Length: 182
Picture 1: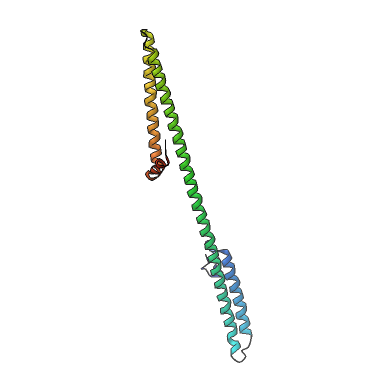
Picture 2: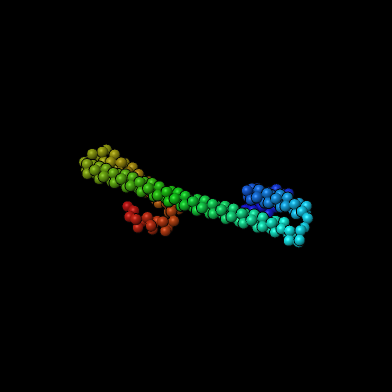
């Protein structure tokens, strides 16, 4: 951004110091030219405006230089912003993929544990057909424990599903289901 302050006030920190230096150099050069115009006597009337024309040309050149500097700086900022947007998008996809992977691994773990518990309960029931009441009572306690474990694992799975639904938008959930979630 070009400084809008006169050279005597300095730049405010928001202004481009490079542009300020160009303005200051131009002002100093302009003052030197004005002195030389005042010191040179006019010859035939044409030389009288040469200094003014040169001064205007120098100012015009400086304005063009500043415009190019602004355009260059704007392009650099635009490219930088675009790179930051791409990085942000990439990181968002990475986080979402990591969250989905963790979710699938956890759901698989819960399913395996539930299947194992059900197998053990079935095995216990098959073996526990004996008339021994103490043995049957132990089996009933184990079954109750396995049922509580099963309920707790389902609660954990439900809580996990809620967490995922809060973190992943419905559109992303649909996209994940279309990819072939287990």
